[in-house]
Amino acid sequence: MQIHITTHDGIPVYLQIVNQVKYLVASGRLAPGEELPPIRALAEQLVINPNTVARAYLELERAGVVVKRHGSGTYISDEGSPLARRERLKILTRRADALLAEARHMGVEFSEVAALLKERNQALNSSKS
Image 1 (cartoon, helix red, strand yellow):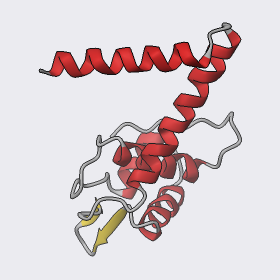
Image 2 (cartoon, rainbow, N blue to C red):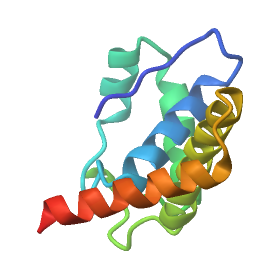
Image 3 (cartoon, rainbow, N blue to C red):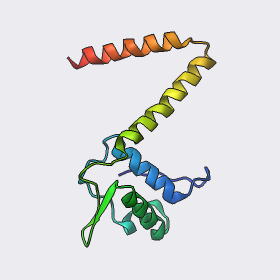
């Protein structure tokens, strides 16, 4: 599991961990039942206080993204995250906003962007066949 933190954006480190784990679950990179690194191991990897990782794991547990198994570790919830669909849509919304802003900046009309998306979708679907 690759998590990257930064101290330059003003977002608390524990929230950066929470957000990245939610993203990894929503994108399918972390599967239900998959074990997260132990608190101390992740803290050492990120060079942060173990309490920060513990706080992040607690927030993830409260959100239903992970479950703690006493004496065994922390795992992605078997039911899948109740936030998974919402997180996927949030990720796609940010990307759509960025695409639309870039198109507007480049003087490309929405109808052209929509046509391009439709064309790319058809190309992707035909390549899967």
